[in-house]
Image 1: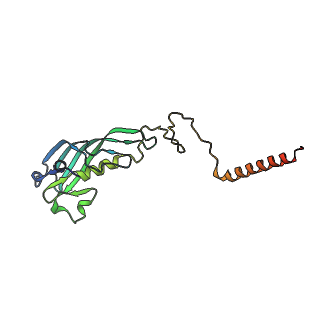
Image 2: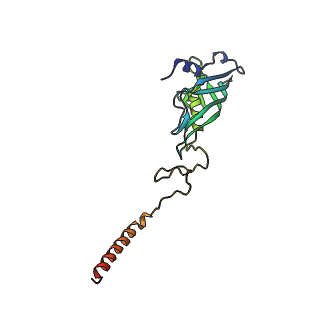
Image 3: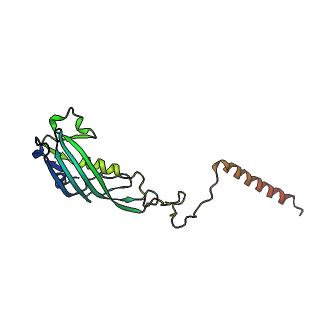
Length: 196
């Protein structure tokens, strides 16, 4: 559930920029991270600090948003499941067109161009979410050479790099069973043919 204050912090009034190409305003604030800034194993935690250092400039087509957004990624390593945490900074560059400049209803949904709302505000949340989520690693690791867990028993490979299980190729499993049967038959024949 969103907090009204959070909505206010992520909606920016650009009325003063309309009709004044070249005019600009700066936006430096820390806001609580909305929900959904995450991938499967890592993300920027909801309500954690999201630091914005942005400039909004009036251009002929609308407003140009540029600057950086900074948050802290937390989650777990995809190999060993240890907790991980590191800073993430993304560069922001987004054009918002004035409502009358949009060519159709889908114009505002374009990845390269979004639309200033009818009340002349811009919504930062979808832009920031797209940028930060796409910057998250698909397979996060605590370190590049993390050996992970044993795929058979879950043992931490870092504790014993030589840890291994004897693995029989399934194509040879039937032959192994046959060899065992032959050995058993041979033992029975030898014991029955022994002189008493």
